[in-house]
Length: 148
Image (cartoon, rainbow, N blue to C red; front, side, top):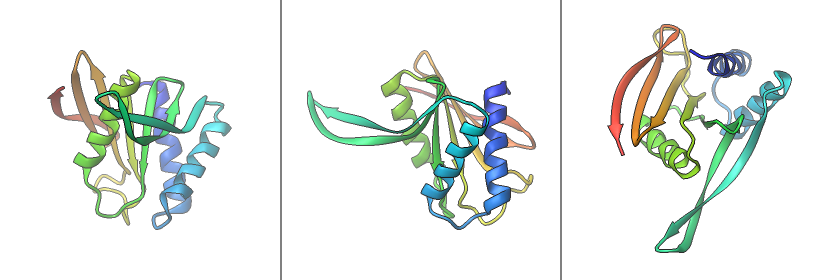
């Protein structure tokens, strides 16, 4: 795990240990921004992402946090977490911005997973190939590969 990912996992764990579950996503988002500022990590927040169909703007998405212009963070605070929906969302943002790394963090579960960890997913995108990793027992373990 590279040092940036380690820092982000540490921030997420600290937030979950301090606040626990049960708040709206915006609370965890604001807390994450505090954590990034305290560690002097550059980021942009709430980036509006236009969606086009046949050259026409038909709506927009919103990237939660872009870290160091190189990693997208998608924060969730839901108890019934659907990994596939979150995966599709972050993959679309990664393709749109040509970003190779993404991290999905769900603060919504009542407890940590069976390994005592947060629900984290790391996504790596390169050459039209997405690799998805779950955070299990302190390491990211590959769970799927998708060609786009």
